[in-house]
Amino acid sequence: MLAGAIGALLVMAVPIPGRPATPEALLPIPGITRPETPDEPQRPAPQPLVEAPFEPEQGEARIAAALTESLVEVDTGYAGASIVLYGAVFNPGDVPADVVVVVRGPDRPVRLVRKVRVLGMWLNSRPVLFEGAPGYYMTASTRPLSEVADFGTLRRLAVGVDHLRINAPEEQISVTRYGVRDVVISRLEEDYLDWRRAVIRLLENAGLYDTLPRGVTFVDDDLFRAEVVLPVTAPTGIYETEVWLFLDGEPVSVRRGTLSVEKVGVERALYDFAHDRAWFYGFLALILAMLTGWGVSAWFRRT
Image (cartoon, rainbow, N blue to C red; front, side, top):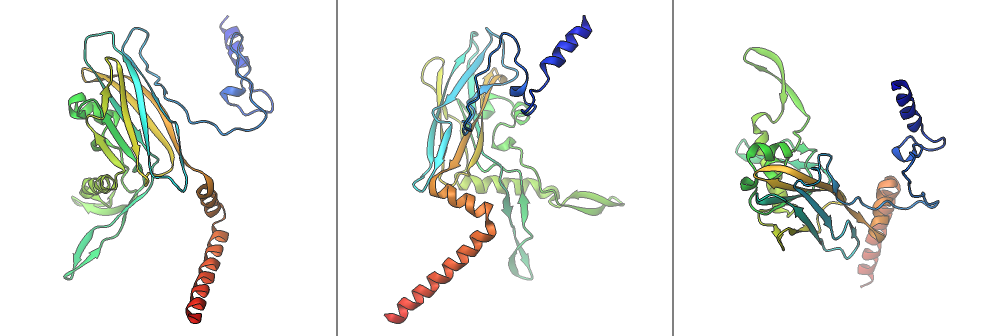
């Protein structure tokens, strides 16, 4: 009987010839139907907020949430965007519920330098490059995060700017410590926290990092809303969203999803052209600059 069950599972997992070995390409299971795939390729829509793998069972506290828009289009008239996140809390108990919203943008490198004094002159130090810093990060909650959960819980979930995971530069050096030669350590050493604070401070001043301790409001007993504001300098790409439900300082439910920020129109065409044909784009830019300079100089000679 066990051999027959294993054989049935292997049969259901055989890929259909001509299609990639993905879950959609597996043979259909009786009783489950899948929608037909259209012949013409379509651009996939951004994923909505979905349940986390540990979503509680029926009858337990849980949360539901959605965005008013899952796609933000960036064109020549783009001046930022404001998106409303709304949802509902199902809490059969009497413990007050807290809701925390986290929006994290795509990672992008951040280059920093420090002013150092050399022979009476202030010079820039050797640059430090952080690769894993999100280009946008926002948290909104029903009350300050320190009142929602303890330090350990927030650190484990990486919720909040103070608990944001930013990878240190990979560059390392070898030094002699306590009589031991060739000890490999990070070039930043104990200054890592100072550099990390500088990254967060610069992005906060640019409006790309924001913490809203009262950014989630309940419009009814169980209905809540929060506003996600994207500045004009926010990077394009896929944004990750998380909506956490806390009861008595413990996370009991979460919804995760994505928000897409994409260039469209002329800006998208120029962006793709500059990245796909970098040499040709640079050559055209050089020719255009030369023609512009020649035209301006000719106009001044005539006048």
